[in-house]
Structure formats: structure tokens, C-alpha cells
Amino acid sequence: MAAAPSTTLTRHLPVRPEWLARHEEQILEPDLPIVDPHHHLWERSDNPYMADELLADLDLGNNGGHNVVGTVFVQCYAFYNLTAPPDLAPVGETEAVNGIAALDASRDPPRGICAGIVGYADLTAGAAVAPVLDAHLQAGGAVASRFRGIRHSSAWDADDSFSSPAHNNFPGMMATADFRSGFAELAPRSLTYDAWLFHPQISELTDLARAFPETVIVLDHMGGPLGINAYAGRRDEIFAKWERDIRELATCANVTVKLGGLLMRVNGYDLHEGEMPPTSAQVADAYRLWVDVCLDAFGPDRCMFESNFPVDKGSVSYPVFWNACKRLSAGMSSNEKTALFSATAARVYRLDLGLLDKGASD
Image 1 (cartoon, rainbow, N blue to C red):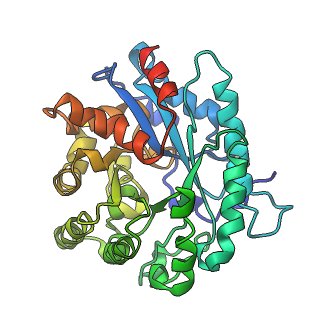
Image 2: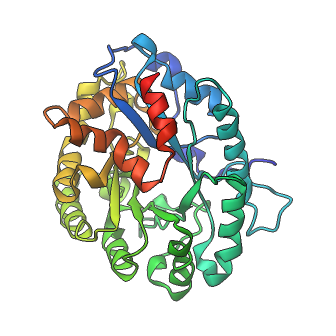
Image 3: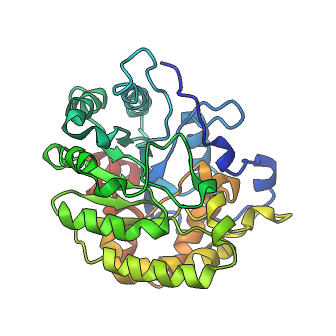
């Protein structure tokens, strides 16, 4: 299986290991179990991120790093089976990642990497997407599939600089009959939908969530608030609209939100431009307003912290990022922290709790 050619690499900030290594921190709350519900794997020549790189990040820091007991892989157009029909090519990604997860599960103890898999299928194919979803489920493991859901990006903006030919999307996609016909195939298979969009589109997701209350929807990256190009210098205005739309989306009980993913180029933060990499306090300060609104609107039981690695690794190291999350949750109860760092993700993605319990106790 060959990797599908990427058209999005230039959209990501370059990862500079030597720069990241300039700042290290003591791991905060090292025993707190973490499920990382959003990371990628790929074989890109100038930024490889496979199991070895992921495990190295998990183990960074004093005493072996944060207590990450499980992870969820999210599609990134990698490992496509280019010998398969085009609609089935993305199943190669699930197949490859399931192999990585199976190898991890054979270790003693297992680390829980890729315990859940979110793949890609073209939902605009309508009901014809059904055999593709079934193929993903089979590729996720014949006995107990690790395949948990679909992410079909709807990210689009009138500013063409945000467009990416890697994304099969267009304006108003989530409202079309074909997309919704394909979307209707998810719930009968207990599959989730990860929504990657930009903040002006949040209301479109609200409409979709209300039309399909039985489908579990996960909003990635807090709804993608933009901060560059046409949106540069408009942070207060953007935040106000984003907050209104987030609070309306939160009225949909079938939606949860991932807290993270704000250190991409499109978000407009400059933490990657310093001579030194950011501290966890600096990252927490950048996130705080957005996270506080999400927590107030959704509650901890419908929120989960996410790393979005290695995309956000262009701005922050793995241990510093999770320290920032722990700073953002300071003062919360033990139950609230459990929800934010592991329980919400484990519930939404139906992860193997026996594996998580083992990882938490090792």
C-alpha cells in the first residue's frame, strides 16, 4: 500500500526538534490518565510520523512522560491502497493503522496507540458509501474492529487561500441531499462523525446535528477559528461570532468537542516564531478563552483535550502541550479532569476500557 500524495503539507508549520528541545518542563500531574483522541500517522519524507515517533513523544519528559493510556488515529490521507477502486482506496489507511495498533497490542504492556481509528469515506456518494463503511469496519479488525468513525472534511471558506484540493468539499456540502444520504449510513453502524470545518461554518454543523440527533458528532479543533489572511487582525470579532455559534451548537446533545488544534498556521497564533519554544503557561494563555467557552457550553462530559500531533508539533512539544491542558483544568474536580483527559474520549470512541485500565495501572 502506497501513501496517497499529500497536497496539504505546506499548510502545516515545519517541525523543528532542536528548537522544541530548547525548553523542557516537569510533567504536571504525572499519574493522570490521558486518552489522546486526535493524532495522525504518515510517512512524509520531510516530516515522518509513525509509531516510533508517536511513542517517542509519549515518552518525552521526566519519569517517562505523561500517562497516555490510549490514542485515536484520525484520517490524514495516508496509506491509501492505490491498487483499489478509488472509493475503496482510503480503506488502505484503516488497514495500515490497524496493523500498527495490532502490533502495539502484542507488546507487554501495550501502550494503547490507535485503539480507535477514524477514517475517510466520501459521504457525498450517498447511500453508495455503505460498502465503503463496511470495508473500513472489516479492515479495522476481523474479531473486534477498531474502526470508530468517519471524518469527511467540510472545511471551506470564501477566501480561496484556505482551500485545499486534498479535501473533497464545497460550500454548503453538509446540507446537500447526497451528503446527508451518506451521513445517514453512519448511525446504523454505530460510527461517529468527526467534523473538521472553519468557524464560519459552525451553524451548518448545528443544522446537521439537529437533523441527525442519533448520530454522534465530534467537533474537531474547537470549530477552527481562523486568524490569518482575510481574518487577520479581527480576533475579537471572530471570537464573538464563534462563541455565539458554539453555544448554539452545544444545545445539540449528540455533539462533543475536541479542545485543541489551535496552533495550526490558519489559526494565526505566533508561538512558533519565538527564539524559544513556548512554555505550557503561554500555550494555556492562548487557549484559555476558547476552552473556557467550550467548557461552559458543553460541560466536561462533552469535551476532550486533543494533541492534533504532529500538526501542532510545529508550535509546541508533546509534554508541554499536555502540561498546558493540565493548567487549563487547574481547580477542576477529579471527575471533571477524568472526563476531559480520558473518559469522554473513551466513551465517544468506545475504546477498550480493559486496555485503558491496564495502561493506567502500569
